[in-house]
Image 1 (cartoon, helix red, strand yellow):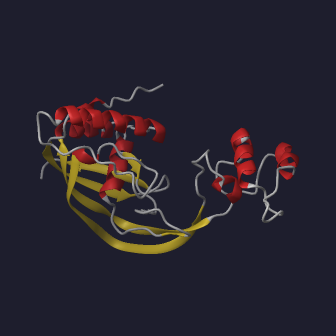
Image 2: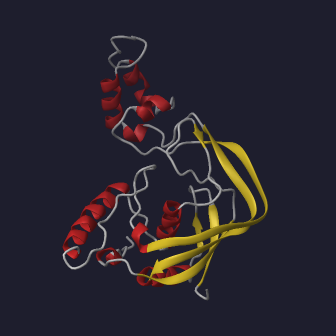
Length: 243
C-alpha cells in the first residue's frame, strides 16, 4: 500500500510562494459547489474548495472520508497547542456543501482566477450518483437492481404500517446493511447534471505554502493529469513560479 505523507498538516501554513496555475480542461467539466436537489448546476469557474480537491488529487492524497475526519480531529489538537505560541486562527471545518472534507484549505489562497476561452458551451447530461452511505435507506430506495438471490428475502420484509405496499424503513435499513455486497454501487435512476465544454484554460494566480509548493512540483514531474469538479472532469496542469 502506498504511504501518504501528511506531515505538512502538523505545521502552521506559511503562504510565501506565488505561482500561476494553468488548468486546461481535457473533458467537459461539471463543477457543483453545493449539494443540489434534483439538478446539478455547474459554476463557471472553480471554487477554492474545488482547487483544494485538485491539489490533494495531484499530490496523491486519496483519503477516505472517515480517515479525513480523524485527521481533522488531530489537526484541531495541533492548532490548540500551536495557538499558545501564535495568534494563528484555529482550523476550520470546510466540509459544508459536499461530502468532501478538504485538508489543505489553509495552505493556499486564490489571488485571482480567470477563464481564458475561445469557446464555451453549457449542456445537460444524465449522471448516476455514486453510492456512498451504508447507514441509510436512501440507497436501497433509490435502486431497483439487487442480486437475484436476495429478491425473495426482500419480498418477505415487514411492511410499513401506514402503507403496506412499502417495506418498513427500519427493516429495509437492516436488510441493506446485512447485504451491502448484493446492492449495486450506483443508483439506477440518473440525475440531470450540467456540464461546461470549453476550448481554452483557466489561469489561476495562487499564494501557496512553501512546503505545499514543493509537494506539487514533485508530483507534477511524474503526473500533471488530475480531475476537477467530479471524476469525469479530466484536466491538464502546469505551474509557473515566474510571476
